[in-house]
Length: 232
Image 1 (cartoon, rainbow, N blue to C red):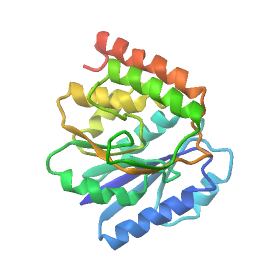
Image 2: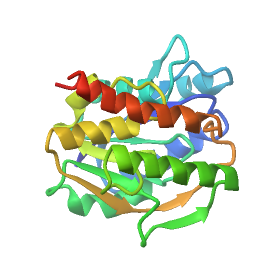
Image 3: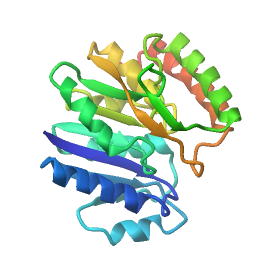
Image 4: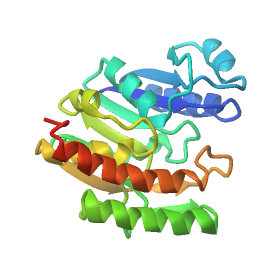
């Protein structure tokens, strides 16, 4: 297995080094050929300084803050390996979850981590406001994007080279890029599967409650884009 790992980062100086060290150790232990691409979204803390002092990384630095979707897209389009994984800098879904993903590589084009399946385990949950808003958002996403996907927003997705060109069509720079990707995957008749995972919430996450209403609006942007044939 050859894999590129893409990590978007904005003010992740407190956690990102430990995450990268875990990733590197995992690949060394499993003898997996890999590259790690970190896209720094114009952090204002010491994230970029710490990254530049680590070996074995490709670091891309955005000159202004664009958003998670923009950063993931930039990293994915720079990836060189046969399989590409994007994951969060806080390691909320641990790299070891790949153990469960690898058995499905021959049958699916994209595998997405899901916190909503019966077999999934939430070790530390979000606060009640985020949980409530998340459930509301998930209902809207399933209604207008894909009813079969129970959790589109978990930041741990693995896919093959067939999916990579779809990132050139993604228009959402914020958190809504996840379900825009799922819309494109379905539209292009690629095979997708949700995988249960163990997930730990990071209380210092950059996702704030006010991001949720914006994500709701981005759902309708995807449908409007499709009506205007922007994905053709």
